[in-house]
Image (cartoon, rainbow, N blue to C red; front, side):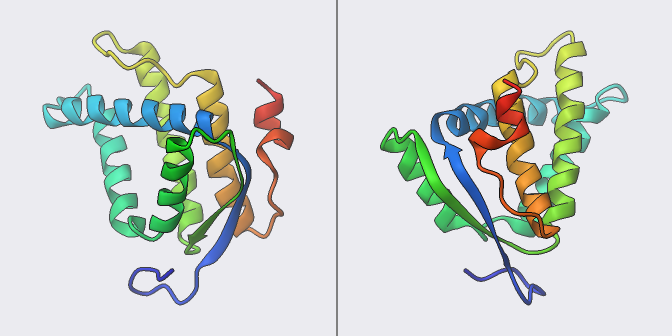
Length: 163
């Protein structure tokens, strides 16, 4: 895979024993949250800074990294369509800049969850515990492996064990 402008090298990140049904649920929740926050951010007032910041972070990440993992995205889509339970080794190709971006995304999504719990006029609930654990594992694997840590399979992760 090729990276965006200025990326001399991409690093391989291995998401081992990726739970496909959980990934599908996490994706569905994230997409619902993004739709609702997009609507809020479009008419944001002073009290709606979390949706606006979330949209800015997501837009920035998509502009910076969107399209570099189309093969991985297609592999996951195919596994979801086939109702597979697990992808043994879901491989991503990411630039070094993806580590700080993944950390920022996790932080703002945690903030968005607090906004969902505290909000009065939201349809989207805070991320369910299993999807939250998955998100933290997924983003943590990107950050950790870019920092030289070995991959941790989903079932062996602290996040999965904590469910």
